[in-house]
Amino acid sequence: SAVISQKPSRDICQRGTSLTIQCQVDSQVTMMFWYRQQPGQSLTLIATANQGSEATYESGFVIDKFPISRPNLTFSTLTVSNMSPEDSSIYLCSVDVYRRGQNEQFFGPGTRLTVL
Amino acid sequence: AQSVTQPDIHITVSEGASLELRCNYSYGATPYLFWYVQSPGQGLQLLLKYFSGDTLVQGIKGFEAEFKRSQSSFNLRKPSVHWSDAAEYFCAVREAGTALIFGKGTTLSVSS
Image (tube, rainbow over all chains, first blue to last red):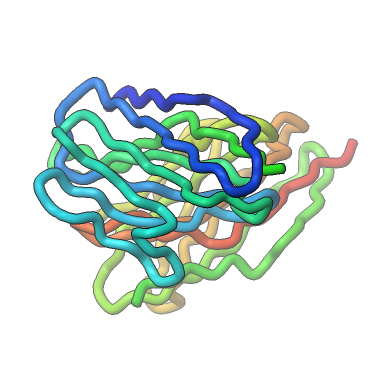
């Protein structure tokens, strides 16, 4: 399996500011994903971040709002820019690991963001 | 495009009663199917998964799910529910090389 850590675990931010969330994995992985879980909602895929290429964003998410970096095979960051209260969510990092002939996806503990 | 539908937003079951949570998917080929559970304030926990082979899959905590291609379904079952099973349950689908797509979830309440 993969052990994933995220920093910060939670934060309270002011409207108009930006927050960068870090995701660290204990092994090298090719595919990393960022999800958002709004209060009382399911998980929504924001983007796929593969090392060495630009992140691929899902419909409704844009790079200017959610810039992503993927400098190496164990680390990624997601920035939530120019925040508004609607950005209050849990943001989760996820990685794809190939083992025993199957691809499995593991999730980090999440970053709980509150925007005032 | 892949999609997952969980028709039941909220289900209440008596403790000790059986449980079935419904999940339907839309996907052209044989998908990889998953069930996750999320307790309040907790992270996601994988209950079980289906990749291929036997269509009845056993998971943790006494859960099982059956893949029915003809019905495009992957329903989650448990023969006897415990109060600690109260949580949010998510069905998810993916294909190789892509990310999991989640359903909207079903909230399970357990009454005594």
